[in-house]
Image (cartoon, rainbow, N blue to C red; front, side, top):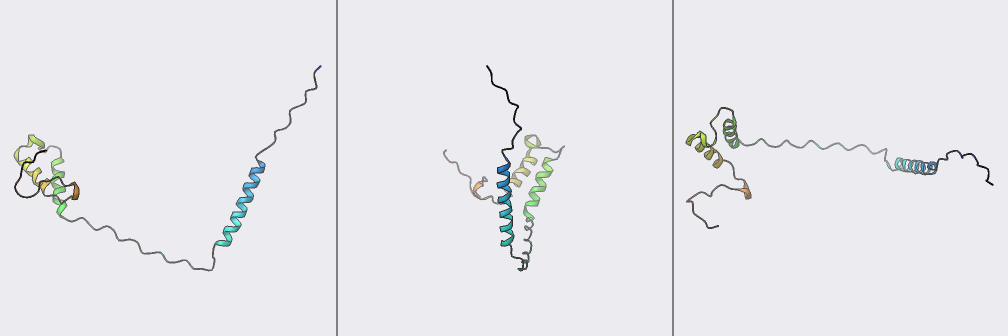
Length: 116
């Protein structure tokens, strides 16, 4: 009625062939790469290191110091500081260096009204 049940076959490794092919390719690449490296050529000397960036000019240091002092705790800030603080902030802002196309400061001279 029923056929005889055979025992389960042992597990066969199917990836052995791929490993053999990969190892053979690695050996071929390693032997070819050894042939391409010149041994009798001396190494070239390295270039001298690049110069460090120049130090920032001292013009920005006064503005930086003023901004730092304004940010300290216990200092009068903003509108509560009154005219002295506002005048100091205005002079610091207007005294900064030119920032190119992102310039927001008013041009020197007479202020004029523009229609938006």
